[in-house]
Image (cartoon, rainbow, N blue to C red; front, side):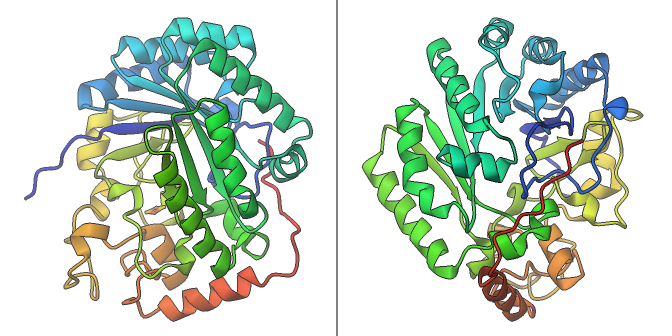
Length: 361
Ligand code: FES
C-alpha cells in the first residue's frame, strides 16, 4: 500500500458567523450555530495535534474569523504550537487595536477579501453597506503594521470587468500576492449560477489579463489564478488531490478533505471532538475514499493525465454527473462534458443579475 504523506496545510473554519452575505459563499447551505462551535481549548488541542502531525500552515477562516472573541488567543496558541498562521478575513470586525494584538500574538500573514473594486459593487455583492470603505481602512492598518498581505478576489460575471483594477489595488496596497479565482460552483454559488456564470469571452479575457500582468509585475506581485473551469477542457487538481496535502475543519470539528465534501452524502466524516487528527487523516473512510488513483473508473483509470489532475473535483463530478467517482465533467473525456458546456452557455446568458444572498448565521 502506498504510504500516505502528512498534510501540509489546515484550514480551520472557526465559525460560520459572518457580517457579509456573499452569494458565492463556500460554506454549506446549512450553517453551524455558534453554540456548536469548538471552544478555545478544543481548537488549541487541534492546533497542537496538527503541528505534531506535520502541518506547517494554518489558515484561520470562517465565516468571518474576527467574530470569534478568542481570535488573538487562538493565534497565540497556534504560533506556540509552531504553526505558520494566516488569517483569511473580510476585514469587518477588525480594529487597529485588534490588529496590533494579533501582531503581538505572532500572526504571520493576512489574506483580505474584496468582493468588488469600488464601494457600489463590493457592498452590493457582499450584501453589507459600508463594507468597502471599512476594508480600505483595514488595508491601511495592515500596511502600517507591516503584515504580509494577500488580496483575495472572487470574480464572476458581475465583477470580472474589474480584474485590472484588482491587480492595481494589490500593488497600491503593498500586497505580495493576489489570488484571483473565478467563482467555483458549489454551495451558495450553485444557487446563483444564472447571475454569476461568466461568459466564455470574459473567461478568455481574464486569462489574457492575468498573463500580461504576471509578466509586467514579475518581482513585485505574485498572481495566483483559478480559471473558469466550466469553460475549460481539463479539470483542476482539486485541493491538490483528495486527502493529499490539506484538510478543512468545520466550526464544530468535522474534518473534511475539501470544503464541499459533505455534499457527498454516503461518506462518513470523523470529528476532532472524538478522535485525534492523526486518526482522522490516516484512517477515516472519507479521507481514504478518493485518495490516490485506485478509486478511479474509466476514462480516468487509463488516462495519461491521471497523475496530473487526479481526476479533477469529486464534488463537481457528483453535482453534474451524479457520481463522485466519475471523471470531473470539465474534462473533454467525460461523457458529461457537453452537458457542462451547455450549462455554462445557458447560465452565462442569464438575463437577471439578481442575487440570492447567503443567510447570515
Ligand atoms: Fe470537493 Fe473539489 S470541492 S473535491
